Length: 362
Image (cartoon, rainbow, N blue to C red; front, side, top):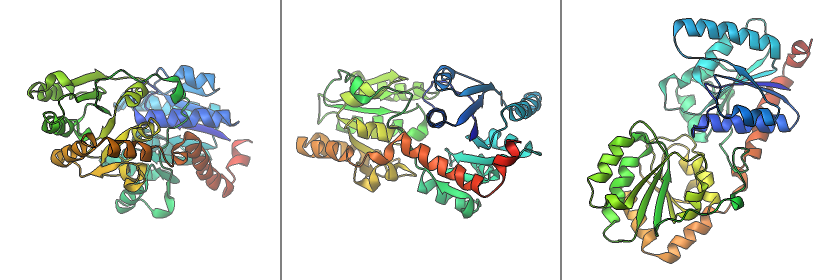
């Protein structure tokens, strides 16, 4: 099968959409398929090439001249590569692939990664729409995408080609007890609530420290918030880390306080590392935590509830250890191999019911 993935870029900046697509492309190529990725480029081009994935330059910046050039370039890529499947991961890509299909006989697949964006309904142009969690699938159905088009392939990142085996990482030497998050510096990631929750419990646990791993446009706002607490010396902004696993291995409690999060890749990673996990009950987070069996769920935007959960764990070493053990159970379904297999099943469903192979190969 010839598969063409369309992305905005393949930069190594912690973008979950890019990470999912790169894992998928590499595993598809490893399993004998001919795979291409069309994007503006980035650091992952080297990794893709090592798996035999061909990269095509495609700049989808949303200016009139650039989009006209992108349309011409896309036609050239399709003519050269002759894909059986075009798999788009962003809105501009699915519009290009739909409008410029013309006489090409490829099947069009889209993955909805950020359902909370209004324009995500455009992903419904595809023949099949993959949702990264059941919560996302239900939301997209309610927004008008036909249920017969929707398929759920929950995110999984364990065994990723982008990182080493967990056993090859050394735990970061953190002040104990250590609370950590790995998230972009955005309001919707709940960084503000996490800082507030830590400030609420810091007096009760004077040796505790908070580690914020990630970067983003609102970092200065959160730094100012932290500096306005009496505990600024115990709140650490660690910046973006290409490999955050040492922080997960070194911390006691991992927190994801998102307001919206369709299917965060960081939850499987924190589970594999054996963290006790506290996360918000929104979107795909409960599914990633086995509906509360593998982590404590709290309401979003509620720093008081988050503080109560942290206090409970920090106040009971036995309870903390119990939740660390629970996190590491039932990890098999969180693997990239399962994502690859379920995605291929979506492709095969499409190609079995049409003459794509015979036309594209002629």
